[in-house]
Each structure stands twice: as structure tokens, then as C-alpha cells.
Image (tube, rainbow, N blue to C red; front, side, top):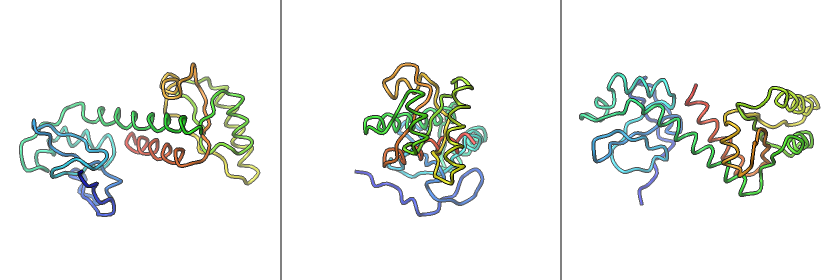
Length: 200
């Protein structure tokens, strides 16, 4: 089994030439057909090159043909590489949301979510990107009410559409969800924040 790359070892972005931890960059390898492949889990075999984990930087690497320079050979980087990585990171985040549901940590439905926020059970609040402003406003007020008491309030994220939340949670017309603290919740937050960083 391939060994994961040491995340503590600094790597250098082939675009910015800035060094950073592996967790802050994306590793790329060359497939047998000569195409550039994103190794998000940092486990694929072969020599890798690194690019800062930001969409605009990946797009620049493709546009300026910097992968060929980094690998010191002619390689093919798809023009859609930046968008493809975005889709992969979104799939990882949705997978983490589904795992949190299977762990019994997800609450859906406006009233239940609001109750979870006000009772401080929720560690994460998810609002669908296409949800109504009224619901978002009311839940924001609930978060503010908790925070105004000097108590820990849930992180709030709006990155999934209602349809994406439906599919991940096995529900119908899911617009708001609360996630209870736990390992699956921490993993979900990490996945979402990785996608947010990538999108800038």
C-alpha cells in the first residue's frame, strides 16, 4: 500500500514558489497516459509536484503550462482541471455530511435546527445557498442570541444547495441542518473549509 505523504514536510508551489505544509497545497502526479492528476489524499505513487490549494493558482498553472516544467517532461493538464478539483472537493464535503448523518449527528427541519442552536447542541449550522432569506435571518438571530450570552455558538456555513443537502441527508427540501459535535462534525468542517479556501 502506498504511504501517505508527510504533511509536516514543507513543499513548494510550482506557481508562486512559496513553501507551505502539504496540507496547504495540492499534490499532482502524472498518470500513465501523460495526463496530470490531482492527488487529494496524497497517496498516489510517483513523483509529485505541488500547487497552492487555490482555484486561481491551479488555473494559472494550467494556463502557463507550468506542470510540464515542474515534472520536467511534457504532460497534459486539462483546461478543466481547476473546475474538476472543485467538484472533487465538493464531493468530499458532501460525503462527510453523509457520514455525519449516518453517525446520527445531523438534525434537519427549521424548528428542530433552531432548537438545536438555542440549546447549544449544534456545533455547525448549515444553510442551503438557495434557501429563503427569512429562515437564514431567523437562525442567524438564534446564533447571535447564544453568542451574546458569552456561550459558544455553532459555526455557520452556506456552501451546499438544497438539492445537494437532500441527496446527502436522504431528505426532501432540506434547507437548514444542524450538526452535533463529534469526530464526524470536525471532519465535515475541515472538508468545507478546504473547499472554501480553494475557492478563495
